Amino acid sequence: MDRSKTVHLTVKNNVTERACVAWRKRFWKLAFASLFLCGIISYIHWGDVQVFGRPNVCSLTDPEVSDSALLNGTARRIHVKGTSRHLPSIIIIGAKKCGTRALLEMMNLHPRIRRTTREVHFFDRDVNYLNGLPWYRKRMPFSFPDQLTVEKTPGYFVSPEAPVRIRAMNKDVKLLLIVRDPVIRTISDYTQVVMTRNQDENDQAEDSFPQFEDMVFDVNGEVDTSYKAVRTSIYARFFPTWLEYFKREQIHVVDGENLVTNPFEEMRRVEIFLGVERILKPSNFWFSEEKGFYCLRNENGDKCLGPSKGRKHPNVSKEVVSKLRVFYSPFNVNFSKLADINFTWLVSGFYCDDEHLKETAVVPNTISDVVLLVVSICSSSLLWYTVEKIMMRYAAVADEESSERFSCLWRAIWPRLVCFLSIVWAVVCGGSRIKDRRHHWWDVLTGAVLGFVVAFFTIYVDPHRSWSHEYEYPQKSEEVYKELSRKKTDDKRRNEKELKLIASSSSNLVCS
Ligand SMILES: Nc1ncnc2c1ncn2[C@@H]1O[C@H](COP(=O)(O)OS(=O)(=O)O)[C@@H](OP(=O)(O)O)[C@H]1O
Image 1 (tube, rainbow, N blue to C red):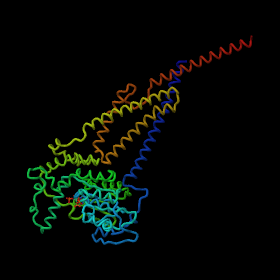
Image 2 (image 1 turned 180 degrees about the vertical axis):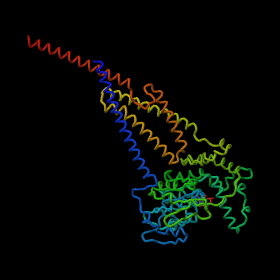
Image 3 (image 1 turned 30 degrees about the vertical axis):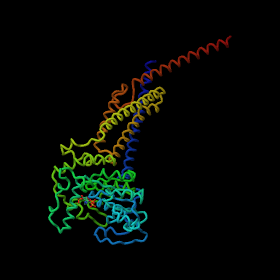
Image 4 (image 1 turned 60 degrees about the vertical axis):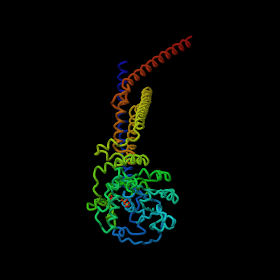
């Protein structure tokens, strides 16, 4: 009897095992299919493809100047029926020499956006501001009601009055701030002044103007913060005022360095921030070897920025550059924290090839980062351990109930589903942190490695688990099955005995 029971149990276990394999296969098929579907949906949503509700670019014409006119520089003001001037709902506030013109022209490629051609200086110059909003509106381009007007004046960023004045006009306005490596920005600012001065003084020799070093350092050799070109690059000094008047979500910070090397990526972020259709494509940007920068392209032709954009910078010695980098380093870290962004060049990028700068680099929030790390490791291990215990318990219950489906669900499907969803969640979180520039990809990769190590040890310390990814407890379930069948046989015997007893006592009764 024992032998026949064992055979029966082995067959039963094999059947359960086979059913579980089928369920497992089904699960993976379903998981991969849903992952594939998610991939397609996110590609359509985030990628270069916009299948649903893609507006017809050709039907949206520039109401004021045709693109071809803009591209060949013969723009004339044409007032198309149904258009009017609107106060801007988007303003590029700066910073000067960070690529504000490039950003504006790239935005203008979008049919939903109309831009002013000139800097208006309304909010930073009293003489203009006193003219009132009607004066300001007159300087705006004609646009259709569904189009957004954008204005750029880099001087706003450093103006103490501009934030409060802009808020008084429209507290919901969307602001764009473009920043680049502060040292390069300072050199660019200096170059512009030198060039303009030399042009004004009938093209005198370049060295008639003080050298860069003489401008940025005072007589003691310290960085001269009274020099405007130096001051403007201290982004952390001006940004807090903007945060006083506007919510952080209202200000989009554009990476000026990335706009030079990867304009499509930066413009995609701008489109997302503005909530306009994603229309710009990589083909809207082409690299001009002659200019050394990306130029713009639309169906009407090509356009590069003028000669005042992308000027040749003077040679600045490595020592001067290093000294300036040390000076800007704490301000950069501060700005990075305030804006909650992490441009690689802003906090760490340039320290790599500069040995002595590595020592002076500010490491932000080291202690709180370590505490956070320990807390997160402990909590995730504990959570995982608890989840696994619950699943083990249910697997045992399922075994006891000897329900094949239930057993498969807890032993084969459920743990895999939890695992799979956790990994998908981690990947999506990591990806979005990189995308939003909250983390560098290197941080996310390190986090992932750390996660795997912690997961391995969590599993390793559990005495009931092996590193086999199998949530099956063969000895346990075998024992459970044996116990169960023993109990069943005993019950059956007891029943039979009781029945016999009842039968004999009832026959006795009848006979008597
Ligand atoms: N695509 C493209 N073409 C040309 N130039 C580009 C481009 N993208 C960014 N840049 C950089 O923009 C810098 C000028 O910045 P701004 O337009 O903000 O200058 S200004 O404040 O309006 O004077 C300018 O600085 P300089 O190189 O010092 O001239 C450029 O480096």
